[in-house]
Image (cartoon, rainbow, N blue to C red; front, top):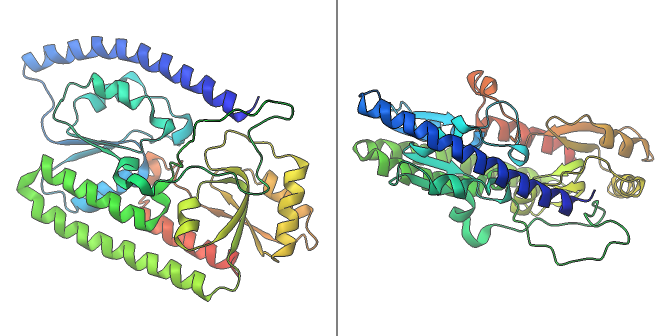
Length: 338
């Protein structure tokens, strides 16, 4: 089954699931209204995010959190953005929070219906793709990637899909943090100065790391990276003018690469004398291993760039930080660009 058909099925499934959950939500809200009448409504300011980078940006801008703001990350069990389905409990959390942050791509199509039914009509909503406007890029199929059309299938004009992985650009991260800080100032104006100061400090760390990335790429003769996997790093690659090859696009649902794709990637590894074949977190390295076995040297290191799509609540509790993960990615990139 090709990717376009799978995506269409997922849309219908998502719509049905969200509709059913919204019915549950109405019942839950009725119960919540009874609690509010009894004086048991939760107090305090609440922020809900869908994914880890958003969550960590909020935590970083809050700093010592003088407003005692509660922050919650919905995708906290390792499920990635593309396969996440909200629960009725998630919908309730969103409905009465003070600020909600989400990516805003095709994977988040369920959000629109949830926001229509939200109990808090004054909620500050941040759509990450909307923040970037015209700088959001369409997902692209580069040379050698598995294509979503099957042989013999009539090619139809597919609806252009935006690349959702905007958090993997440090430059975009700085702009998203601007929007988040502005949102925090709206919901907690008493601590606006603190949030602005924390924002400026955090953006300094983002800008410094961006400069490190640029310096590493500038000092490298090789400007090509190759993934035996999905490729969610287009924004990062474009920031530093890197050429890339990969088995699949970033949002692809495919897991099996054809021998033609394997051979193409192996030939590119040979052509550019690449020392590293990259994967993303959670990979079984099967495709990367097959690419390596079809190269001349068969000695490339298989390394992981972390796209932060599967960060768990346990990872956060253990101290996972956006900047730290991007710093580790830079160390991997240094080896890949040798």
